[in-house]
Length: 220
Image (cartoon, rainbow, N blue to C red; front, side, top):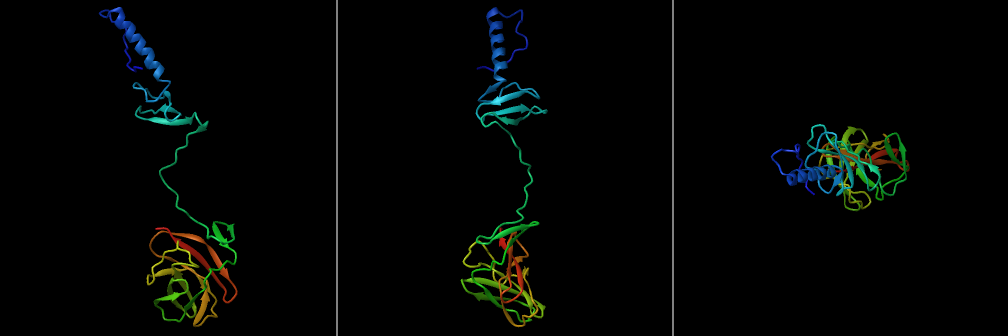
């Protein structure tokens, strides 16, 4: 079907056959404005058109240089356009934990890692690396708080999603009771100063020490 459009179909120099063909082409062009597998060749601003390839009702934009999706005729659903900006992931869940939503914090009720991590909390004021069960990569950051400390880990109970490099400085999030003087069993974690991280939830243990920690997963 031709989409050529002739404004003047009655040129006195034309023969009747030419004029009639132009009129027929004009009707074909008008018909093509309703729908088709390809966009019409003569659009105008505000013109509706159905894209039969995508089953989409479209409307020509004001600048007459693009088609705007309006409605999907196959599904009966309006067309949604997502903004260019993307929202950051603010939370996640730790598998196996019983989670409850409080504010925007995902909490795991008294769920401890499969393998407790024993770390020396001596007041050295330096970052030291340690090892523990299940090939844990443990980084202890001693802030010199006379027994209080924090630590980071690469894997907890065999989980491979956590990725932390031993020996790197981390900002810990575990706060423990001051009763720890030299060693203690912590179920804690931390978050790196660089990279993109996601909070998986909080872990609380009251069996040996009063310790609440936030579990983080490195995204990138």
